[in-house]
Amino acid sequence: MIEVLTNEYRLLSLPADAESVELDMGCGKGKFTLELAQRYPKRLVLASDVMLGRLRRIEQKVLHQKIPNVRLLRAESAQLVRFQLPWRSVDRIHILCPDPWPKEDKRPLRRLVSTQFLCTLPRVLKPGGTLHLSTDHQPYFEAWQEMLAKLPFFTPDPGAIADVRDLKTDFELQWEAQGKSVGHLAFRLGN
Ligand SMILES: C[S@@+](CC[C@H](N)C(=O)[O-])C[C@H]1O[C@@H](n2cnc3c(N)ncnc32)[C@H](O)[C@@H]1O
Image (cartoon, rainbow, N blue to C red):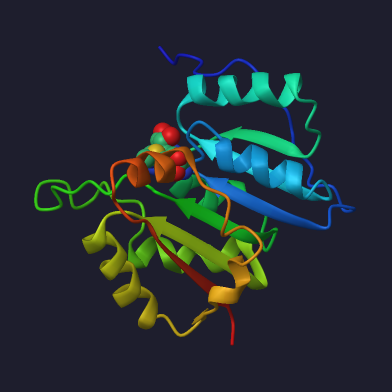
């Protein structure tokens, strides 16, 4: 028997009048999403996560605070990029404090950011669009630098996140409260 996993679908058309489209991938509790959307009301902010409960709590805040420019997507990140988002539809992708799966010897396939994953991003990023990554986990950070240095279609562009560098995610605040520092990287699609 085939079970229905979700019982409601709504087609989301990306509004043509949005100044830009930002994607907070693995948005968690949504602090970054909400602050980004409130700061830049003309931008459309897509927030995706696999955990429905987290998205529901963000939805309550979006409704309570009347934030019109947020759309919540329950989606697995790799699938979202490979199959769900329209071609060249996003100006900036934020992947902030993704689970580092530190026991990589046992769980090499669970990390989201791999060379294979990075190679799928040009499908959804607009030319000149930005990839923004952050983590407190130094080995993951170094692995990103190594992978991205080998991908000719990404160019380092730290200035591309200047407008959001002061916005902190829930996890970033948590790590900083524990005395850890969170490193950020920004790369532009194209030269
Ligand atoms: C460590 S939390 C970080 C949340 C948020 N970005 C922050 O910094 O506070 C990682 C989030 O990514 C989500 N997540 C993990 N793997 C995912 C995947 N493959 N697809 C979509 N969401 C995922 C988790 O449910 C969780 O909310």
